[in-house]
Image 1 (spheres, one colour):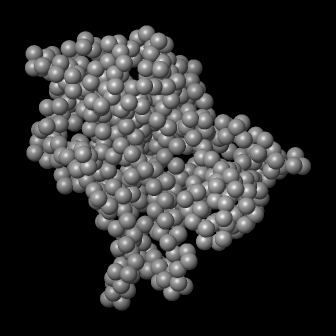
Image 2 (cartoon, rainbow, N blue to C red):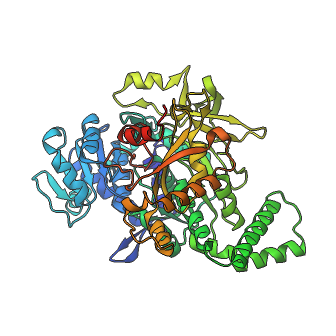
Image 3 (cartoon, one colour):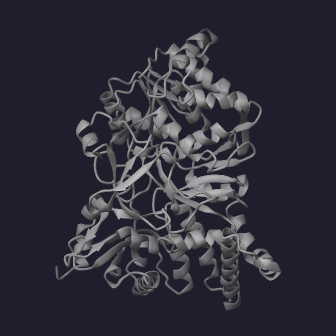
Length: 594
């Protein structure tokens, strides 16, 4: 057997960690556990049932569901019989899901709950290749003869298929396609990224020894498993014998962290930004002494942790001072996220250094990295033993980086994709002389840590010729408790402006405390005092920006950007072009002289 095949590699964990907890999931309000041995049995049943349905090597099978154990069991079952697993974001529209189903000529689709099932049914007459829909949730109301429940599907996985499953797995190789993952499509039509078992297995190679994880560790699986970041990390969790806690609703992550107390986990920066903003918001309106004590404690914690990192002597005074700061303030920050951690990992978007150091002061290390779906995903990472805030770390083992035109980051790595499914021209455009073009701009510092400055396609060039990275501006304000969404505008314009969607829960509380009676979203965004309030906050956050990067004008919007309106990707990234089109009149109004 090919040991770099994912089903083989994780299958070894089933035996090595047989009695250890592999999965935890909520059922009737209580956490249920599944051991590695039980997980092995379930994966085998899924694989056998798929063979009973006639699945052949290379067939594309889809998973259209929120995070749940069945997602992983199905994924590994598909891989065990040399199928290709195609994930679809649970929040995708019916049209988006249909595009993926059609593009891959998918034959079997697993759905999560009624919402996903109904989306598929709405497009059913346009999906001629789809022969089976299998619903994970037994409460789903099925509407067609080709639909069945997951529980019924499992009954098809009888032992007579066991030898056939073993034969498939024995013939499997690491060079075969494991998955086709469709990118979020911030700049155009989604593209199916083809990743082999070897591509994803390289993540194991890169992380081993760098991120120490094992039995007894708990990871909270809350980013969509459709996202390669969470999926590759979950594979690593199972490879190392740790426990994966499944959370279907990402909005419940902070509360669940307090309950589960994960020791390791991955996240996008928005989680850390929200915790940071909530803590600082709690200081507003409090006593000057409370605020002073907070900042003193964070300063003490930061100094203490940097001394430890540099292996400088601490001394009795510093140790006692830190113990006091921890007792008064720092432990409360840790408690917010479920107590002590081995490490956090962050990726998918820039994270402000100020936020990294805030968590670091509390004894919580956030290891920021850089990656793309096309790279399986990691290209660089900070690690617990080698990190530098304000950077995305050093290249992972086996990965080479060089810089192309306009300092574009080019990558050559065992993790780089095979290409885009059914898109040979786009695949050719993604490479130059055998190097993958990331579309990101960056540079190494003198210690070999990579700094990302922006995405080439996002770069703003003002009418005065200034090149401005919008993410630098957006990262500066993302930590504000009163701001939910923010996008910098200014391409071919005289100056930078912004569209801002407030955090209306926090803003209504502020309005009521300041005598503003009408707290509808429409009224608040037009109220002069509210506009002045945001003006002051933006100016405060922009102090570290150059004059030409400052937000000169802004408009508050009464409604969130959404996936339904096409303004957000499934991973909640803002589609700049769509927003610019949808709000063209609003943007033009901020530039009356243009």
